[in-house]
Image 1 (cartoon, helix red, strand yellow):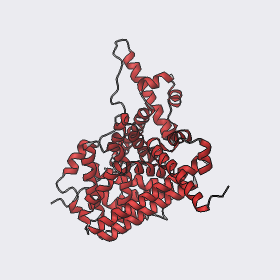
Image 2 (cartoon, helix red, strand yellow):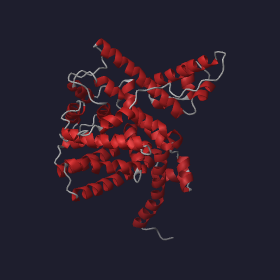
Image 3 (cartoon, one colour):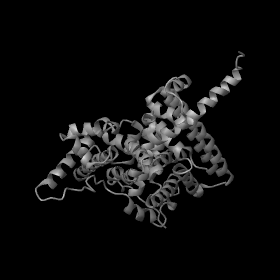
Image 4 (cartoon, helix red, strand yellow):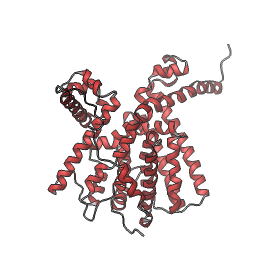
Length: 435
């Protein structure tokens, strides 16, 4: 039998691998890396697990190639998008409406790549291969936004900060974009963040619309909201509320100690000292239980911050913008609240995007984003930021922390110290220079 030429063998391998990569990307977007099992991948492509192993060695090899394909597609997309933006010859005043197109694309035409790349961001430390691919992705993003800085005349650090801020907003958009309130608030916030970081304070919230709408959109955490006590008159209502509260407290404690992935019905039931059936009685899914547990973490943090403000001394209160910048630079904040608000909120947003029945979870997280920052910075020396601008700063800081975590510091890609000083100085100030 005649041997197959090497070039044809390569083509045959590529033709066999390509559908598996595409199918796996779709599964990663729908179910996450852990949820995309080899069995499901094989079923989607009508191949057996042995064939997948022969082509990619193991699941990590397949997922790595999927991530690499998504990164390359994102590079091509962003380069084309910036080329088109350059042709418009925009100045800084036009930058926000141009950038809003990236958020819209993330929620619609590029939803699957956005979900997959956000998974890469969260899983970069899971293996060296993922880390290298994530490095390439973030480097592509940085280089693209440096090009945009040269086009618009913005300082590179300002454009880098905007680029990171947009990564967090894009991760939220996949589960929040169906909400008109989200689109209005996110669009206006982007306009004001860009104006601030571009040094155009007079353009920030010129008519007060951001402040007015944000007062309706952003909310204090209320993990007990929506409780449905039993309708009887023999003390069962009180017991039901008590068991619900114990379950929420247990979930919050697990989240603070071990992260969101550690929340299971069994772990929460054991921690709360209740039966397993009670956890499923009060909460219809792990997503819902994780959501209310997360809000309990925030509620506890807000109470501590309130005590700090009243007493004037406390480790959670931010007393100056220099201190805010130093916290980002140190990358040493890894408390339960930090993990939840930086990584946990993105995980919940992705979970909400993947299950329409829990779409409100993502919107709830986005509404909550910035509340802790707002509480922590209200007592800054010359006045703290608005609730909306606190959310803007929080979106950037989450991206900075996730990038530091993914890259083991991130300094080789982004000038995070420069961004920390710039964002603290420009985003954490009260509105000024209103016309």
